[in-house]
Image 1 (cartoon, rainbow, N blue to C red):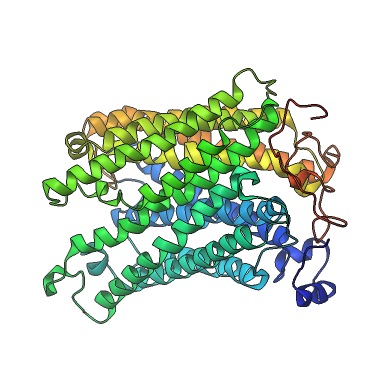
Image 2: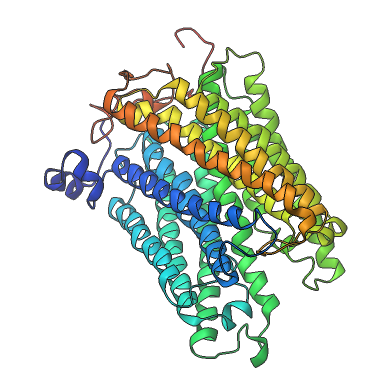
Length: 538
């Protein structure tokens, strides 16, 4: 039995560029598109990280002496927007999703290969347009949230470019989400049941549902905001009778699920990595599936916990406090499942495992502070302080970015046929882990003691702690060097990996490294137990 594929796609394969040139082409190969997402996202990560370094240099002293205040606001806006929309979301969804999902369902490609390519090629021009807006007189400086009336009263040109860029990136996410849902539901190999899929498929299915349900709300909101800026309408402009709190409701209806759009794929990826390097089955498969779906449902009804200081009535505060507390339950289930997967396993101490364990530590700490922020009295005390900055970065960097690096170390042999150097990988992890915690752990103290976020100048009593945080940021920047050296040297002269260096059981490892254009020679394998470690011949 063969898997049906797009015949026009097959006929066009001979017209596609070969070698490294295919990564600069409108390729229809899901593996090429996945690598395009990853490399493009990492380039924007370097830009966003440079902007973060500029922010920390400014904050090393209490006065605004490194850059003017308006430039600081522009840098802050670009940093947040780039890291979310051009680095984390495209990589954990687009890069690994494109590369792995067809393997996991036993398909030759994604359900809609052309739509898949369009989804990627919306990203480079959107990102370049966003970065170029910095050089436009009056660049966006209302933060990544673009709250009115600030976003309406600041210079219009940069803010409109920002809105257009985010709209295009949102369109890319929607196209990708539709494709993932169709691929997982409709292109599964005959005989492969839903409850036999690797956990990353469930994570991407839940993520894609959130993308399709919530991203159009953000798009509509930003279109209305652009009308306020260009046409002087009064949707959100209080001078013309608009309601800024309505903007916050609409914005956070997308932007809190966006946290799970970034984190749920990381949950799926770590669930693929841990069993391989612990040589144990994934603990509690069924409970993990239902916990993902629970997060999807609850993730759509917790947005207003960002708005406890916006005049929300007591009944609304109570509802969203309870809903936010409930969402900690399925997240906690996953933590215990990961720990149980590791418990008693034959653990390999390698770069992929270290970054995964670092993710668990960081994410649990971020989750604890998240439960604290769900409590109204505490949230009112630390709202818009550096406590929130610290919590957010423990979730999205300490969580998701650690898993991005773990996944690169785990799947690099499959993509390239070469092994990354483990010594350089461990150095990369140590510097990253120390630098990250040195940067963001002190910011909890700053927030508890009242230092506001999004400001370039602050009370001199906070200088020493800010300098510690800036030192951690410097270490994080330095940690990129051994990683880049490792990738460059390994691609050129790395040790041959073989087809399955980890002796893994999931379908992507049951073909050559790198894989052929249509993933397998012959019929796709039927893998009914992707986590059957500890059994004979595994």
